Amino acid sequence: MSAEGAAVPNPEAEQPHPLGSSEIARAATTVARAFAWHEPWGAWSLPDERSREETLLRLIEADIRERFLPYGECSTIAGLSVTLWIPPPSLLGNGPLARRRDEAAYEAYGERAEMMRETDRAVAGLKPEGEHWYLDTIATDPEWMGRGLGARLLDHDLAVHDARGRSCALDTHTVENVGFYERRGFELVAEGKLPGGGPDLFFMLRAARG
Image (tube, one colour):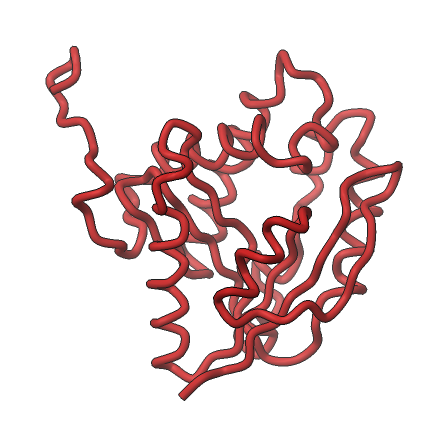
């Protein structure tokens, strides 16, 4: 038990499941911590280490609560490993997930707001076309990295997509991540680079499996 008397999550004993509203805060903290310190995108988009994690936490929690939970698909293991999926174009319409960020989110990046707009335009231009579910985010709390939680969660999600005959796509930033996804049936379909000397971009596609 924690000092407050709440049970400490044991993700190794918990099965992947749809993210619930009571898990949003924990899931947002997981994503913010992972991207602030363990993803090249975090340091590139928010170079000020003093405010990076706090800014990401605020943006991600709002994103999950207002966009991904009601309009996308979200899975988790104990809130300590998280996936956020965007539906295919035929299901998006003009809803909140049809655009990557709203104006308030861009403004949170301060002097880098215009660079973020440019980035999102570049990403949109390189995304694979067609009907696929897009893995916008996968993250594991840094204290639990290296224990297979992210792999177990992604394998669960892909099994769900396979059962429903869905294609999947994603982008990632490192060659190591490319290999991780290739082992799960994704194929590299496009490459690019984020503006302003930012990280590499690798776009990957996984065909629907019956």
